Length: 336
Image 1: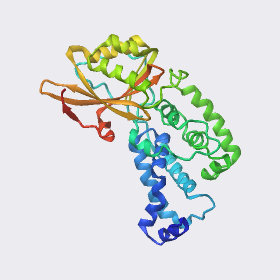
Image 2 (image 1 turned 180 degrees about the horizontal axis):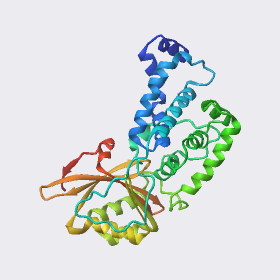
Image 3 (image 1 turned 90 degrees about the vertical axis):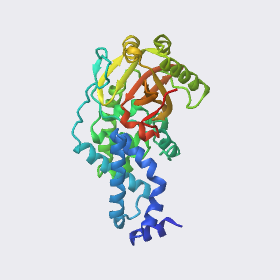
Image 4 (image 1 turned 45 degrees about the vertical axis):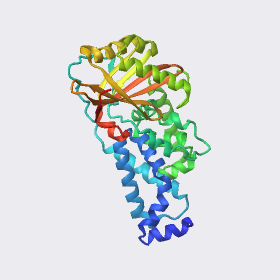
């Protein structure tokens, strides 16, 4: 059915027509909200608020821009509202019983970051990018990129994502933000400079191997064998000298092979052993981590996401076990 006919039906209150109109754009809008908010849960809320606002205001859609652009305008404003209204979430205290972590290299500022499930990203992989996009799709959803975005002021995040990630023209972004082209260009210049200053310590490494490639599989396989056997030496051999580890919502951050090795060795102390279940997050290899217990059950304790560079690991991000259900991972499983 033609879009114009669907719009007319939706304006008349036809919910099925509205769903048919918006369905093709839902996943990319969800990813857009995630980039702006850094939180999978907040992105879900922002998407639902976007759909509600679009349904309520469809009568005012005049067709001067495409429906997709109109939806992005609504979603961006909902995310800006969420960023401005949100108070800084408190950092979480260390909560791993029986493990005393080493002194962190520093305490991170971005502690509310959440991972984005890989299977949902696959559905958004074919998003049409505008002619002025500067980032590859995979880079623009990486944990490093999304984390850096969260350190920028809300309006700068919106401009940078709309211009450099999605490739909308300056005039289109100005219309979305009720601004001027000069204002958009000025905000973009400041955002690019701020983003460079907030990129992680491991920025500048060579590109990771392609997802699902034999090269990626080789690194991931070595990591799994080292982690499940608590072989710290084998694990250290996989790390770059400047490997970076973070663990939102806890603020602890570690940089450097030695201190990351000490952290991992602490997890394996007292005979603690883990099973890993593979997944993907933000386009990167990820693993649900399950602690083996004497009762024959392995209990989910978190999700680890790896950032690869060549045949090495340059960053590890640990999330708590509350994120496991988003990845279809169980809370526990039989020990192997």
